[in-house]
Length: 536
Image (cartoon, rainbow, N blue to C red; front, side):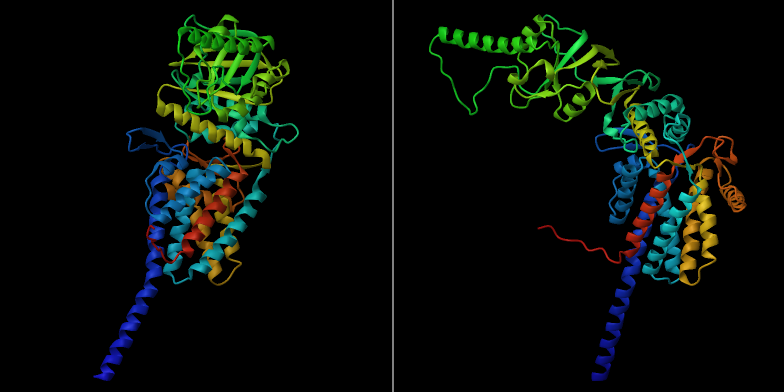
C-alpha cells in the first residue's frame, strides 16, 4: 500500500507538471486567436476598393468609415491581447498618420505565421528574435528602394496626398482635398526649419451644411463663435480692423467670498448702479482709446465675461465683439492674428493689438462663423472649413483630410515608395532570397515572415475582386525579375507600374508599419500567462 501511494503521488505530480506545461501554449494560442480576430475584422477595409464599416455606439450615434484607427478605437474590445492591436493602430496614426489598417493586417498575418512556427515546435523566443532581425532587414531593403524627392516639388506631394485620400469614403473629392492639404502644409512650413511641420498650425473646422465640395481653405482665422450683439444689433463687419484679445471680464467686479451687501434705501441702490455704469464705461473708453475696433473675449467660468451694459457701450462705440473664446484656442488666435493676450485693463495699449484687412461674420450652413483675413503680422497658420451634408460625411471628410495632411507632412524624411502592395512584395522576394543564405531555425522564421508580408497585396487584390493567388504569383514573378515598382492597379484590375499610376506613399508609412507590427507580435509571443488582479 505504501508503494502504491508513492506511485500515485508521483503520477499526480507528473500530471500537474504536464498541465502547467500546457498552460502557456493555451494562453499563447488564445492571445494569437484574439489578435487575429481583430485583424480580420478590418482586413476587408484595406485599399481603395475596401469596404466601409458602420459603427453604432451605445448612444445610437453612427459612424461610417474605413480608417483602421477609427474603427478599432470605437470597437468594444475585451481581450487584453486584442487591445494591443487597437493600441498598435493608434501608434501608427500618431507616428505616420496613414497605414493604420495595413499595420493591423500585417500584425495579424505575422501572428498567423508565428502560430504555424510554434506548431512546428520552435521556441517563442527564437521566433521573436528572428522576427526582430527580419524587421531590421526589411527597413534596410525599403530604404534602399525608396526614391529621394524635393520638398518643393508640389506635383509629387499632390500624388501622395491623392493616394492617401483614394482609399477613403470621400475618395471622389480627392481632386479638391488633395491640393488643399498640400497647400496648407506648404504654407505652415517654417523656412528656418522646413523638416518640422506642426499640424497644430492647421485647424480643421467642421461645419454642417453644403457638400464636401464647399470645403475651403481660409488664409487667416476662422472662429466658430458668433459675434455678440445686444438688443440694438451689433456690428457684423469691420474693415481695417484693430484686434484686441482680453482675458479679463467686462462686468462689475464681485467680492472674493460669499458676501452680502444690505442697502437700506433707494438712493444707495441708485448710487451702486451709477458706480457700476461708470466702472463699465471707463473700461470700454480705455479699450476705444487704444484704437481697438474688434474685441475678442476669453471665456470666463467665474462670472459673466461680458455684461449687457458693457455690450451696449461697445456697440455704441462701433466695436465688434466676439465672446467665449476657449482658453486652449488663445495660442492659435494669437499666432494667426499677431495680437497679444491682455490680462488687465492697465496693459490695454495700441502695441498689444493686431491689424487685419477684414473681420466679418458670415452665414455657413446652419450657423454663423467669424472670418478674420488679411492679418499683417500673422505667423504661418491656416484654417480649413470642412463642409458636409450630414454628420457622417462631415466627420469622415475631416478624418480623411487629417490623414492626407499627415502624409504630406511626413515628407520631411524626403523619401518616397510606390504603393499598391509593391513594397511588401519586394520585401517578401528579397527576404526569401536572404533566408536561403541562412541555416537552422532562423531560415524558417525569415521564410515565414516573408510569406506573411504578402497579405497586403493578397488582400488588396481580394478586395478589388481579382484572383488573389494569380495576382500575387504574377507580382512575385515580376519583382523577382527586378521590376520593384509594380503593384496592383485596382482601377484597371491588373498589375502595372505604380509610379506611372501616381500611387506613391512616404517611406515612413511602410517602415513604421513593419517596425510597430513586429514589435507588437513579439510582445504577444513573449506572453505565457494572464494574471487577473483583485480590486482593492
